[in-house]
Amino acid sequence: MFEFREYKGRELLIIKDAQLLSRPYRNFEGKTSDYNPTGTREFGVVIEDPELAQQMAEGLWNVKTITNRDGREFLGGIKCGGEDLHWIKIKVKYKDKRGERLTPPNILIRTENNEQSFGEDDLKDLDGADLMNVQLKINVDHQVINGKPITIGYLSAMRATMIDDDYWFGTPSDDSTPFDIE
Image 1 (cartoon, helix red, strand yellow):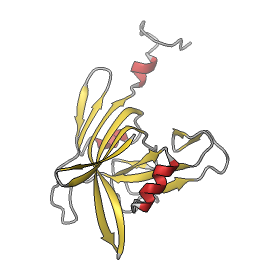
Image 2 (cartoon, one colour):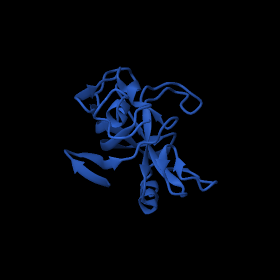
Image 3 (spheres, helix red, strand yellow):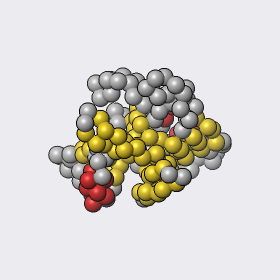
Image 4 (cartoon, helix red, strand yellow):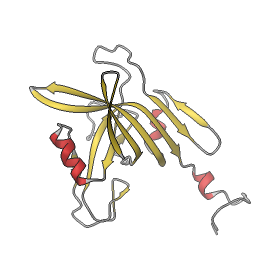
């Protein structure tokens, strides 16, 4: 669910039960690649409703589409039911262009046994993680880049549950295994 709110003069986007795309659309580490030559920390969030995707594009968000040419059931690690997948890029910033520290995003990840606050050095662990119950708070920023107005989202807060394979599937010596693994 996408909800736009105004809070203390800032525009926020709240996303409940967000679906995050897998690599190469997820790069919390900020690793440089063909898809991310600048090494920006960012991740892709699916917009399930095509009408909302259109409205956001009209609001100057850079809405991207993964075209489903083969009618596949999964695109970017997300079940799409054979349809195209619309998504936006969210940036994760710790420093501004001058290298000065910004207020860091508040990232809390739950596992079976604990909750952990993730800092800048921990983010690489989220790149390959299976996440569920993802809640996002995004600062909406309207900018003009190269004379063109654009809307950019910056992560302010994230809460999620990390699926731990040992928790979900157990180990052969674990008597509480919820599935028959043999």
